[in-house]
Length: 126
Image (cartoon, rainbow, N blue to C red; front, side):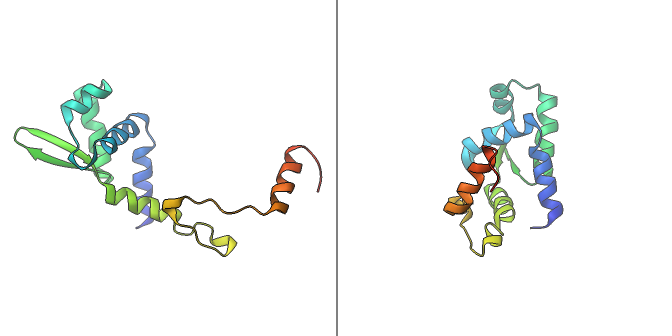
């Protein structure tokens, strides 16, 4: 994934309404929701929703689908998986290990590092 694409995706999600729209679409899975239903559930004016859907679509995070007179929008799970993979591809690399993004990047903390961190929080010099 290119850095420009990542920046565009993150920028699209860095706005409250767009994040709410995206999260709602994730909840509804691949079938998605009609634009009118999104507007109703999030209490958005049609013009406002249209603007935010355009931004999410332009960033490649959602996909529109025409069914009759309705347009349904669904989250593009492949795009989000690629974004998460990009963000975590070097997870734990500085420790000389690799962790699985799906399991979360939780590097193990050695007892010495944990003790030092606790001492710093308490204002004790190590």
